[in-house]
Image (cartoon, one colour):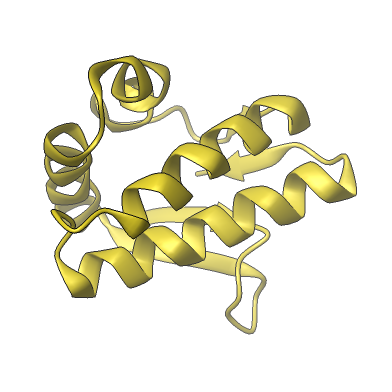
Length: 104
């Protein structure tokens, strides 16, 4: 079990991560990002999300920008930077399509 994020790059159009990986990534993002950016996304890492959490398209673009910034940070571990880059790309796809970005 874990988190499935829509508009992803796998064969089902998702990005997937385990609950443990998700929690660990949240800790890394909190360390890498400025506080103002972290405050905008910390709700995504504060525990289990509702079964189908939807982010409106405009907010998906904002979150994607924050993920892209984190992926470029020299503080972000390389293996996690790739995950965060894929999440940013998924958020941008949702934004550009004008569709809700689903996290479940």
